[in-house]
Length: 420
Image (cartoon, rainbow, N blue to C red; front, side, top):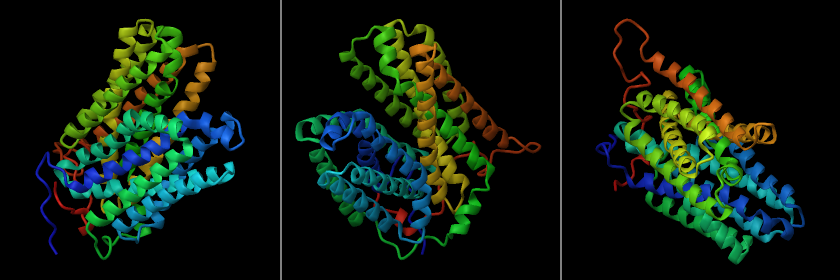
């Protein structure tokens, strides 16, 4: 049966926006917990530092669970996988809201992370296939925009709601929203009898692509660099820049605005010239972080550089995600899951090293130095990818080149939803 024509350049199908709403919800859950730990800890009879394991459990669940759940659900219809992921996500929040045991809440967070990993892995594949070759990276950028918007809007709103209603009330709201999202996706994402014939062996065989690992390395390094700095941005702003603690959220809004803009820029230009988009962006991010070290004593310069760090750093994310899915060919689900693991690995590694730098003689500028190192190293896999596009005598840019227009993986009926 022939597939419907892909949407024209610049037009995205409705399913991409549904998936972005899902990533917004799940991104809110991942990051809002940090703002309500002081409320959770005494209610569960533990310390705030111990309650921080709820953040760790989610990160570990995303790193390990994304690829695992991608393979475990490989033979399920994609619509069913998304609905099941959202259902488990909702159930995890309900369980956490009902229990008084910290251990149970910890387990619920881990299971919720598994569901989130499954949703993102399948969601990226559906989004790129539904959008078609001309819009694959833009579709990824819209999904990632949901995650960025979660940090800018969802986390502050969720933290406020948690303080007003209690953390259990917030978890009930998140569970209800997940159930609503499951119902909407179950209703509007078309059903197909089965996925394209891809086996677990096909998915694993796709990992032999060296270019795939270069894209994943870029994902680890760029996210590690930006988040290394962002995680410890408050002490830099208050202790060195002299910005009052009450004004720090305004700077974080500037960071979020830059991240949203960068994600949109990556989606806009990454389909046509992925390497020409990402290499200058990585270089600009490293330079912004290096400049932040001496110039962070001046508030206007510090805020501007933080905005630019987010703008250029987040430009890279949708492009390398779309490249990873593309390099996997007709077996993209595991590769998509590994991009989620790569981002979370970068966050964990970058934040850990930045914390060590903060505690060292480098002080509050240490995290920015670690961030500059990570983002500078991002150039290595990106340049290696660009080099593969130019191998061979007088070879033109083709569909197999990293700088060719990014095609989507083979479509299935599920990925061809009603166009918006």
